[in-house]
Each structure stands twice: as structure tokens, then as C-alpha cells.
Image (tube, rainbow, N blue to C red; front, side, top):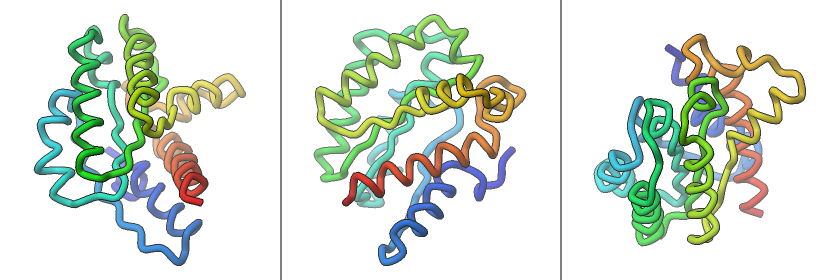
Length: 177
């Protein structure tokens, strides 16, 4: 198990604080291990809206496909419902797509889930951070997948989280200009 200081939300917070030294940056990680999109949406009131966030980064879809789920129109409706609920609370939204990991790549529905996330981001005009493309491009450039993904074939290593956290912070900082 990684220390919280090594997870992408904490890396992102540190990098944003470095990039935006005059800003007050607070990151609340409301993610839950093993959670799915419907469960995320069900927890928004308690775990997200209660904090009145300015920005919500919704990491979604990996668990929905990694454990044999098959994305369908019902799941797309759940993503739309979730994004609309976040926007109704006046939060800016960034959708973070799937992990590029062996367990995801072995799933039947990962490309459909990717399409759902991309479509919803476009339709609802919210940000999209493609962790999938970032990791795929890193592996294509010669980074060993084992440097980014742990032994379980799903979760990121500390280096994988560091890469994602820094890239996400830079994307947020650039967008905020």
C-alpha cells in the first residue's frame, strides 16, 4: 500500500502549490478503493458536495471494466448524471479516464468505457485528462509498464502516481491561466 504522500492527489497538490505559489491549494481525496461509477454518484452529496469544491477531478471507469463489467447506455447515463450534478453545484469538472494497465487492457469493455468518458466530456463541455493516453505513450516511449503499474496489474506504482499527479497539476495550472 502506498503512503498518501505518494498518491497522485498529493503529488498534484504539491506540484500545484509549486506552480501557483500565491494560491491556496487544498485537495480532498474522496476516492474509494474498488468504487464504481454508480457508487461514486451515490456518494457525491456526502463526500464531494459537502466540501463545496471549486474543481472536481472525477477518476472513473477503471473499476467498472476491470472486474468484468460491460459498459452500456445505463452506465453512460450514470456518468452524465454525475457530471450534471457536479456542474449544478458550480464545480468545474475534469474527467480522468482509465488506467493503462494489464487488467484494464484484458477487459472486454475498456474501449467502450473510454468512448463513454470522452463523449460525456465533449457533450457536457468539461475537462478530460487522459491518464490512459499518458501512460500508453510513456510505455510506447520505452518506460517499462512495471515502472508505472504494480504487481497486481491494475494499480499505479509511486512513480506512476508521480507522473500522473505532475501532469495533471500542469494541465490544471495551464487551464487556469
